[in-house]
Amino acid sequence: MEPITGTAAGVPFTALPPEGVDGPAPLLVAWHMLDAPRSDAAFAAALPLTGVPAWRVYLGMPLCGARMVNGTMDAGLERVHRDPLRAYADFMISGAADEFPAALAELRTQLPLDDTPVSLLGGSLGGGVALLTLARAELPVRAAALVNPAIRARSTVALIERFTERPYPWDADAHTVADRLDFVARAGEIGDRAPLLVVSGEQDAPEFRTDAADLVTALRSHGATADLTTIPDLAHPLADEPGIDPAPQLPHAKAVDDILTAWFTRKPA
View 1 (cartoon, one colour):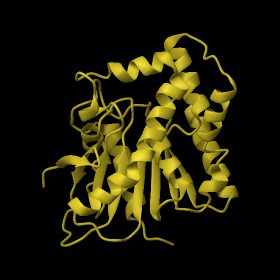
View 2 (cartoon, one colour):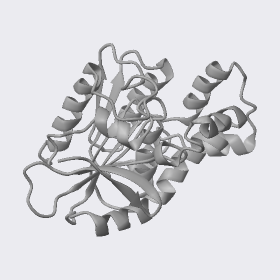
View 3 (cartoon, helix red, strand yellow):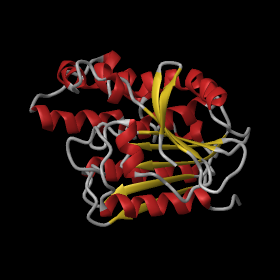
View 4 (cartoon, one colour):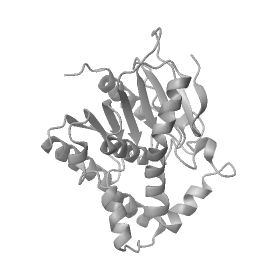
């Protein structure tokens, strides 16, 4: 079946129906990267998770895809330069998490979903959205997975500092925001809310690889089921530039897709 596109409470989405399922089916919600693939449609093409017997609904992040300003990512890039922590990372992660409950409620009126717990998937900054959603504990979650996720806001800022070649002017408020978006420190709030898989590219930024390992260790210390899988030769992106429109799945994205499909189809312990 062809992808279904629409909006739910103002949030654009691309939905892939389950194959071979009659009647209501479970829901898997995904938030895309801000690197390529950087839209809901492109993320759905990169990681379609065809073997997962659930509706896979890819939500658009603020200022991305159908919500780009003047058809470009320039508005997001302006935020990167203005304040990479508050105007960009927090705006994207917290903004997407804030709008999720209303979007979920509307999705349930648009698609034939059952009432079982949802599954969550996030890539890069979208991984931060999935983690913040878990920490808020506003809904039951069956399983979650992250791909090259933004786990600590300070690591995201460090990467942007290298990109812009400008040091970030940390102040007390910035440290408060960064603490709120440090999910290793908040592992106790996530605890055993849901089994969690972290997929980390061997060629991803060193900070992100370290954070991935630290998160799994911290979650396990709080009794969670948490696994870490490293993908050889995988850098941060999952698609070629510009990463806005759907494109054929690349081999390294297929490797991630296979791992995620196995994770989300595993039988609960």
